[in-house]
Length: 167
Image (cartoon, rainbow, N blue to C red):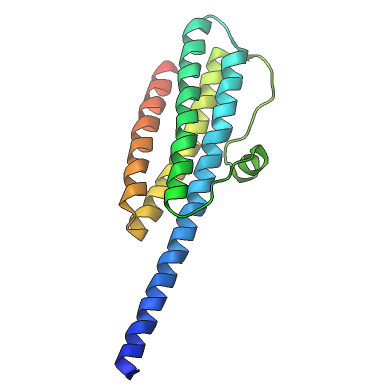
């Protein structure tokens, strides 16, 4: 094989190897996001069950909406990982080990404290979503990048609403 063909072949192998590493890194970030959503889902359901106080009815309904959306996010992120050639985390132990969201004890909580916890967790998840989007953009993965735009819009709206409820 002529030298110029060997160089091109080596360049192509290096490029493919670099893309594979980028995909692996992106899938790792997606798995952290998956874990965040899975733990958040369980935590939001915990808050839904244990919330109490003057605005119980509204908080109970809103927290149910939040945990239903979190459950949908778990599924959509897992499917993105599979479409990207990766393996999504699938056990509670894996989720808890990988997540930036911390589970809470099973105990009663005021409406204000429940909403404060939901807001703090959404802020953590939003940071992870942005990290995934940056990695997807760097890799040129338009599918994952666009999906993260949807997560950013959803989380930003929730954060705005939760911020308004603190006033």
